[in-house]
Length: 124
Figure 1 (cartoon, helix red, strand yellow):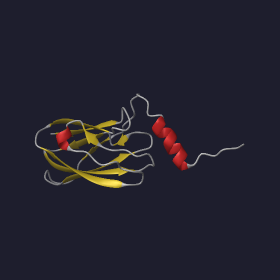
Figure 2 (spheres, one colour):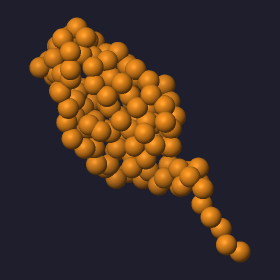
Figure 3 (cartoon, rainbow, N blue to C red):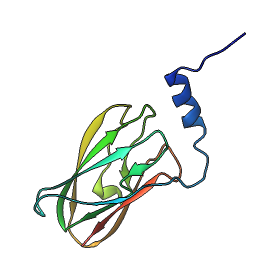
């Protein structure tokens, strides 16, 4: 009997293959806008990666436009819980996350569904 995988079936297989290896999180981007109104889009992909993997920002308020370009559900959660998190972002969905950075530093974020899917915001 011949079987065919649907897009949903492929998505389930990808989620199941999360494993513990590091994912490639590509590129970097610098925010646009004044320090009180910075914005940048961070995409989450079925390859279990964030793009860009590094966001460069200034001290102040940053709105991350978090966009899931694939089918596999993701989230974006800061290691410092006080900075915030998104809800589960399903495939082809986007959500804003407003974050206030009151000091310079490097702030790590991750997808809690996929080990190794990480990124960072570098604030100067």
